[in-house]
Length: 599
Image (cartoon, helix red, strand yellow):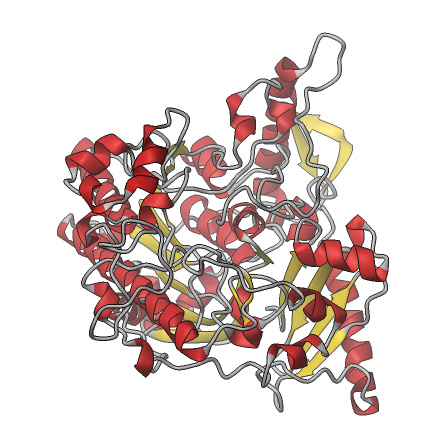
């Protein structure tokens, strides 16, 4: 950990593009064009082996915002609450750093039902708020009937959407929450239509023009935010959370014609057909027992068994188009930062919550354990002179989204906190070579208790609800996947099989590798138990501060964290009912119901 906050760093620009694959940056991809992100790489550091810690969105973002592995924060699916005991980077900057962070977009943070009354409307949706941050998108009119009319595009849509907009209870997607119906219709179709094509063989454009896309609107609001903060002479911390390239896979003009489906690559990491994938493991058999979801433009995750190659190329072309749209808008944002003269005092971070299989292993979206779901981009630009020698460099050490909270707090506060499972990436910014003591593997998890695969495995293999989970440990040469509930592990030899197609867990030649990796995974699990209070021994108190018996490496941050927990405890008393019991939300009993939202 660094001993002081980053000199000259006043602001934080933290950008997340949902479902952005780690191999889809233009500098390393044969097809995708991302010139603005490529420029950011040349001015900062690109982490080539960066991984999400969980899928889907809410578990991934809980790790990203708290610095905790899913096995600690326990947000196992969209809608599962984030416990009030956990802080996050925004809460710490607000409480300790004197900066009020702002979110434009969403964080997928479901409220802890113990914090609110049972009748609180926040329990009706998991599109909650990141504690400590001001969400500037929650009341946005984007996507509403009024907004679509003002933009002159309401007439581009058919009767189906108009009928929905007439319903007073209907909430249209506004960047933070709502139904994404207005993002799903191709231009001129008048309804949702799968894989509509132009006469010259490109995917049909979205019904809305590029300057009305949610990506453009949110980016414009971010630029306005930065301008206002500069005018007010205030430091700022902005988290811009963009939906794209997440589905709906429909790009506005001119992006829809950037990539012709017939010229787009097909995934190399897949067996000859889905039935061969299903023979690898019971989990994959459960995945491919599901039919391909339609309409493709919005059914985001699962098997694509039966989908022809030309349709898959159309989906991939639209996904690449949305990435280029995101890139152009990040270019607008970075130009505005430069025009405002704020480049030299702003820490810039770009990443994603998780990836997209995009046809690999005959799947799309984010699920399971394969590389495409978890490998994501990370680019950091440190404006300080100390980082000059690292500009344009690439880091091949394994880094994880749990590293972002300690990195942000290290730069902005000069301290880390014992809650975090990750480590600050600041040393890589100052010397991009190997950092002593750094991890030698990536770790990620998937809990499928609420997924159709979990329901099938409970029925066919006798798994219990809490058995529906897996954990991955991935080194440079091997990948271990461990399942609960008695399901056999998987082991892949990444040197001979980078596509993860052949399980060698039962091959005697790999018996020692399997044993060593099992031991390493157990050690990792033991090291990352909840350590919030283990740095303290009660008995010495000075001015209400619990003294740490450990070294100075964790003391400063740990004290402030304990005080925050004490504040939370006193605040929580107001949420207790008169009989002393805490209010609780209605729990879902159907563990196969995932119809709440596609995010």
